[in-house]
Length: 101
Length: 458
Image 1 (spheres, one colour):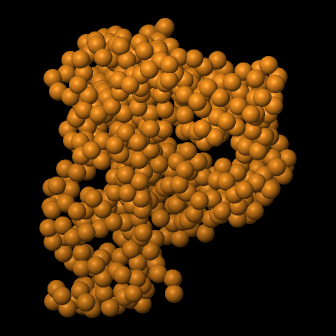
Image 2 (cartoon, chains in turn red, brown; image 1 turned 90 degrees about the vertical axis):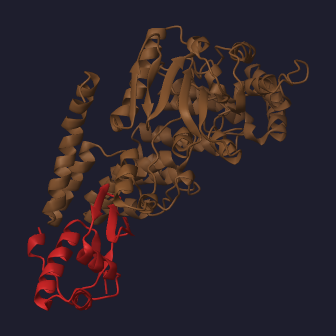
Image 3 (cartoon, helix red, strand yellow; image 1 turned 180 degrees about the horizontal axis):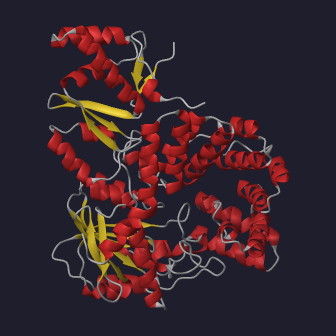
């Protein structure tokens, strides 16, 4: 069966971890990632960097959203929407993996 | 030293930097090593990261450091990357058919350059002399007959592989080996030493590799290295240095074998390995090379002869198994593998046999016993793993194996197409599209870019 990733819902209870082939570091205040499988370099903005930083295989998406909302003093619905969209992109690029319970 | 990558460690230990490397070898010993992504991320700013990226085409997340991935085929890459070498001159052997030799060198350089044209360019000038850049440092390749043109105003690293005197033709069907059926040398240590001395080179350090164990020097000619070392160090004494004891006994053993005196042969062989245990090597006879080249009759003879000397050597059993695999006698080969120790090569042979017998689940379980680490076997491992994982519907493992191939410079168009197909069925259209495009790029764009570059466009 073919799954369509665009319809994948990012649940607030999900936990994700960084993929083992991704290397990252903070450079000039922004998170810079190297996807060593695809030989791709990515640079995140401040909000994306904060989300990535929290993606530690322990925290639920809900907790990450709350943390980011606090840090950037932005309306919660907006942060929820942005984080969900960002997580979908990370999943699509396989930069994060769903943490098995 | 035995293996040529020992030269890199010797230069490093001596703290050498910014040196000209004069490399006499039938092989270039330069292959790409992907640096660690960690080093990329240690840069202070994004601009420096981009600069670093411009210096290397590939990055890896493998656990081993760059240095741990150094081997006798790529140590010059590491010497360049760590700043030991700032100019690389490769002197290759003279051949009786010089034009064919130049073409062979050209093919070799083009193959290296075509992988990463931005980091390696070399054009032929005249008489087999190629000039270019590797990672922006000057590079040249020239035949031995052209070395009188070389002028140095400073000391150099003189780096010699003994096989330079032995493997003459880079165009031969035996290359990278010599004609193992009748090995000899085209240049004597005496002539070589005389010619190199006349160059008025001031060597900062001289490194000489015998390259028997994992290289291309036949063991029967190892004694040449002893002589060359003695000549280069100025201690050569024809009475005592030529040939050394292990080599003498080994030659006597071979002579006794030819005469059918097996007992005497074994006695000399035992004495040879007592003097130097490296004389008990899988490559102490041309059997493996002949088999690899498909001369089975001659390989059989060579194996039979050497088995008389050393009946317990594991290489013979492996040879028998490989022959069965070549003849597609899968069940028989599998049976022969049964009581073999868990060598990496045996493990992969078992997997291949089981796959051909359509026992995929068993093959998968057997593959789990393989331990990565031997470069020449790992390529086969990833190929088998990708193929097998697809057969038994393990999409994630197949994806991982295809990425493994790409990371090992084996990223062919077919690896990208397989990834595209696997991602499509997984529902990841982003990755499916990405790998479809990459596959097309590898297949069509790379040759076009190469041809444009050759025509002088940039």
